[in-house]
Image (cartoon, rainbow, N blue to C red):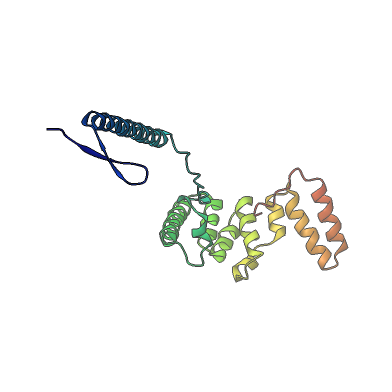
Length: 216
């Protein structure tokens, strides 16, 4: 039996071919397809490798803009706090605690100074307590020039009746080598038109060894 195969020519006509020729054509076609398949596999492998290499390359770091740190200020007894807290119209939550602690500390200091035998300490205690009259009474009975000058200085800003007990003349007696009370006397003499008093005050101030107002 003779096998007969058909092949199409260029115009689409089928032509009979011998089995040997058909087999050779088939082998050639299969070989061509295998080559194409190998080429396709090679191309796909190269593309996959390129993608892997691209993924392995480190990406550039993103630019992160840091927010500026909050401005802080030092608060005595509290430490550093954000400035925005102090700029607020509302008092910070810890303000009342600080005020209470300050009041307690001031009270302890006043009690300690009041227990002192030193007139100047007790004048300071009265002034811390806001009692200018008590300070003036202590100074009036004292021969301590520091106590006297402290009370007299506060009396310059206070209208307490007890302040009328104090004078620059008494201060000058207690601290004659200090120019401050003499200048105060010279100023008072100038205001009342007392030329002799003015001259005396300026002279005593000029020969004094110190200048200490004591209260400021």
